[in-house]
Length: 279
Image (cartoon, rainbow, N blue to C red):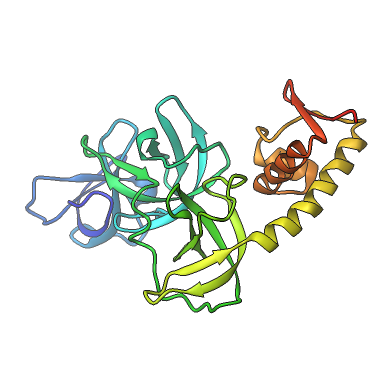
């Protein structure tokens, strides 16, 4: 039986809490498909298409639900919770997918959506990784020089720059000569295609786009701070939901605007609040 993959297994035995599946009707090795997952038309001796993973007790279990990620693939998943040893991601199943700290390429926070792959760890458990995406992304994008594209930041390199998955699918990069200090892994950005390499990878820039937008967002943020009598009662550490509700900005855009205003010494960050600087 293949962990982390779809497969067709035989409906071998029924119990009160589900049915047991096996690779053959004579196979002793069986896996439980919980009753609420059993198709209405399932019949003993027939095959059922399932996905295998491990439950909270590390027991092999089958599901007819479709996870957002399987072995050999990659997908953007939302961070549900960040714990002491890693993060837990929503991948469409009852049990969240664990992302160990050692498999992160940058800090993640609750509510972030990050691009990850799936692997089996030394304890035979399915886990997420933010590494190895570069070799998995497609290089046959339909885009050309001058096009505007949307992509997700998935890794930074001191030598090569910012790596972006355009449409969460195509391989792209922003050169190291371009400032990326305001970006985080998981940020979704708009950028312009500078060129297409012979191997199909895209070269991007967001200089013009980012700076124009940052100017507008910074002005909007200052107006909001003034509406709060000069003290905004939260910072970029607030949840994405709070930031979006109160400012209308994404968390990434809010952080860029805060960074811009702080660099220009127009605001002060203290005590979990943002204050207008006294000029």
